[in-house]
Length: 314
Ligand code: RIB
Ligand code: CA
Image (cartoon, rainbow, N blue to C red; front, side, top):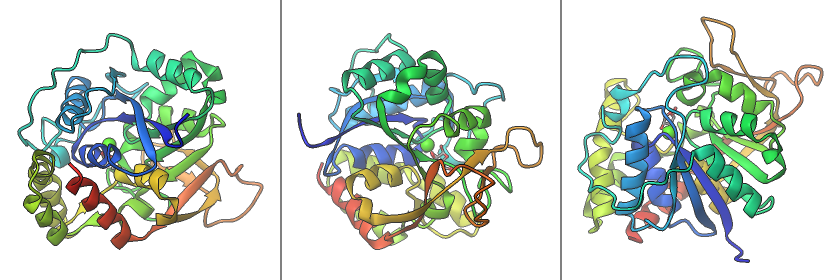
């Protein structure tokens, strides 16, 4: 048995997901043992294709990728074309994967891998939690076989990026997210509180252009869509490494710090649908069971260097 942490990535492959995949395949200490695509940033056909193509571009067609949910459990799908472009990858050109298309569903494949690894599997969910929720409903005993669920999603103290209160991944499927937060799984949450601090600045992005490999050039090209939007919104000429955070944490937990808290999801309210509600700043034990490690701080310089180093490794 290798001493690498076996990781399954569930992704709605948009631009920051692509950056996360590129880094994940090279981060020390982890091994990607399977992936699943979910609808979110763009439609499932595109997220599935993007996951396959980015994985192939990275030379990892050995990793099997499975198609999951084409829509959220109850609410309509709201793609984020403004951030990721209609294709999900900012219009960047990428060759088509030649890997066989897996017929098995994401839910069956994830469950089988979790049982095969007998409790050693860590799942990194970096899109809406629809696939995770459906797998929990179909295979309730999977909670015995998942060691930890690291999530990019939510926001406790910094408001939302999709509505005033809510972050995209949770807002996209609040019912799935509530199912996951109530599942009893060991959850480590990377919300906007920390991911908005994990940025690549313009100088670091430009350095990717100088890295002489097709992976870095592709990612540099794809980054123009989100960075242009961020600049327009006055958030700076930066790329938030939202989805890289959970993977970087698995490689080097010392990059981050946080606190245990209760986190649950608003599924009824019209005005704050998809908000992650927490007792993090209102420490009253009678409110919530503390069901998640909420990450709040990151060493920005170290994670930026770690990411750039992974791009240089191709
Ligand atoms: O809010 C950021 C999250 O929403 C990221 O996972 C991004 O890819 C989008 O899915
Ligand atoms: Ca994502």
